[in-house]
Length: 365
Image 1 (cartoon, rainbow, N blue to C red):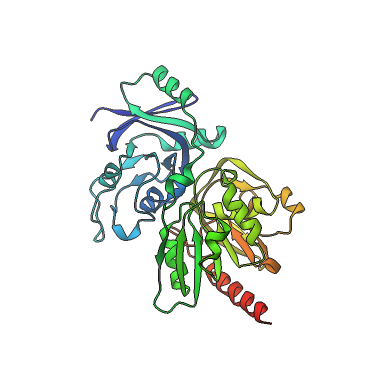
Image 2 (tube, rainbow, N blue to C red):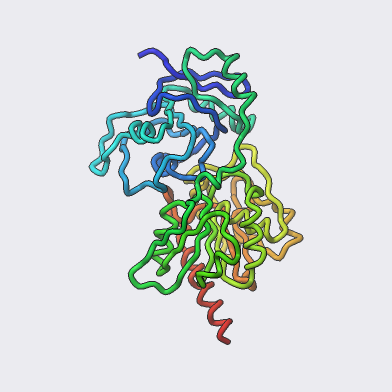
């Protein structure tokens, strides 16, 4: 089989390979994920919108695709890059190949390249833009297209639901409003399992939009892009902080920090994988976590806020959790819903329920 596709990075490095999925040309920010499993969850995670994802684990596609593990109704990333793609899955749950899944959503997959070399480049130089294109595209043509490409600033708008929708549980204790910046479906499932009816509202919902539903708590979801591109959500948190229990994950965590006067910054190559060690500073326990983010909260900037650091990443000491118990607000940078990944952090959903109970008790006191 002859090479028919290639990846060209903005620094001019070329990787030749074989095309699967959609036969289309795409550009995007090239990032790497260190998970050994969970390629379906990665592909359907809205937080990857605008990115070309490189999997460091060499064998991808071997267990196929099943509808139950989708994290959204679409595939919202731009492209997928792997070392060895298996288009003949062996799994009793599989009802579709990964290639077919990507093709259905017009996303290309590039296989057969040296993903170790590619990951080292991204780790040493930082994430950069790239293009998956035909083998016949010259390097000069590819670099010209990359020079004209601008990373989008409206990713949240692209992935957020344009309408409200509700996910109910059998015996609800609480009603939660979730602002949808690109919510993974398993987060909604975990809130349901915690005894909550969840009303999901669009990313640009206002304070009035949230309060008209009379929620017991507010949840801020994960999502793609720069957190500073979400001024409406930042203002919602600024106004509701202390007035209603608030829990944020990933982008929601960064928005809480910005609303409290802290700063965020773009990391060199981000955190993406299901094996990141995080220390809980409240009990000195270590959690192995699932992560996917390009931005982080600036640790020093938190000194001028009313937030306390609760979790720290043990690999690079970045901020992984913040809270203000007196104002009933907390958040984490990682993904406690664990799709895919370890379940060390699921207790955070119980912590949210306890905060709501404490808030109600304090209001009635």
